[in-house]
Amino acid sequence: MYRNHQKRLLTLLADDKHSLVYLKGGSVTHRYGTDYEYPFRQESNFLYLTGVDEPDMAAFFHCGTGEYTLVIPRRSSRYAVWMGYVQSPQDYRKAHDPDHIIYDDEVSGWLKKVAPEKVHCLPGAEEDIRSLGASPETGELQDAIAYCRVIKSDGELSLLKKAAAVTNQAHLEVMQSVNPGAREFEMKAIFERHTTGNGLVHAPYSGIFASGRSSAILHYTGNQEMLNPGDLFLVDAGAEYRGYAADITRTCPVNGSFSQMQADLYDIVLEAQTTTLNMIRPGNKMEELHLQAARIVVKGLSDLGLISGTVDELMDANVFALFFPHGLGHFLGLDTHDVGGYPKGTDKIDRPGLRFLRARRTFEAGMVLTIEPGLYFVPALLQPALRNEQYAGHLNADRLEELFDFGGIRIEDNVIVREDGIENLTTVPKSRHEIEHVMAW
Image (tube, rainbow, N blue to C red):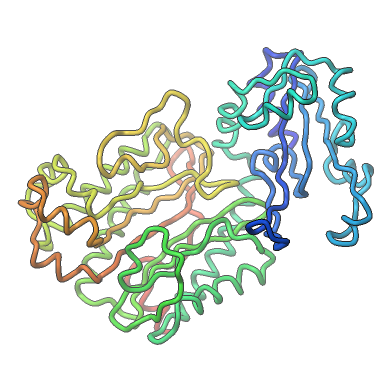
């Protein structure tokens, strides 16, 4: 898999036949200058091209010959004592199949022999290359790697499917465990017990386990509050398998059944997701889906009497952004918010609700993305809007103020773009009937 990734990248740089690509792997990081070590996670671009999951590594790739040179550190006995087994060059050769292996203190002499015209590197690595006596070039590599990473190989898809399968089951176990009086962190523990128990020890992001009004906080990580009857509980959490992420969100009623208002609002979000999932196919664009989801949100809110005006009037006034303030989805892969969402030369849309789109490009087969419409009641957005002429005439203040403690609803699936639509990797129940059935077990 990794050799194929290298070939794909070097094809884009084939005109530089006498140049090299340089990538530096990650290092162990510590908390605020202490000896507390965070679990090591390899830098994503380096992992994409090498599969090497060990700190303090580097690699060169020859644009003309395709030769892969792995640069390894000289480990001391101290490293062996504190960090574990020290691998030999033969170990690395057997595990990762590089064409050449050199130690990090041999790079300068090796580069003089190779004498590249230039060395393609990512921004921030220029000084490393200059210190070795070579000329760095940062104009092409970042965009080239992003271009490659957007379309997933079959090997990558198999890893994403594994991450999704474990995450699906973890979400199901949480949904079955939700009950009034439990704490958010207890639900987090149930989720992580399943993912860790299946060998997926890295989380791709800090999980959100948010009840009540906290479910309207998009990146809530407090996870300390009690789950109260009558509230909703939103779980946005995933697992990572060999670097590849799953990112799934579900919202359920704490007491196992939706109230009428919860049901009405939930169905708006579900309709927005179902509609936009059905719109995904090569040639369509993320912003088109986002605007369709926004139209469904404002129509649903209007039908409930929470806002007023025709759908076109509400869209023209950007009322949707008050209730759906984030992007519809993002690319998924080695990073939760994976690279490639904005190809070179693509600008963000300067419009409320669309400024935060994490991806703006035409879909192609082989892309992997999330679709996650949401509907939130955020006093910090709604209170100023009630005093703003642009919005106030469209807002039913009395009804909306009753929902300031409601929180929010989000539903998120992970999908592969196929030639005829999508392959949905997410199997966690999401219809109201399914959720209530699962919670009754």
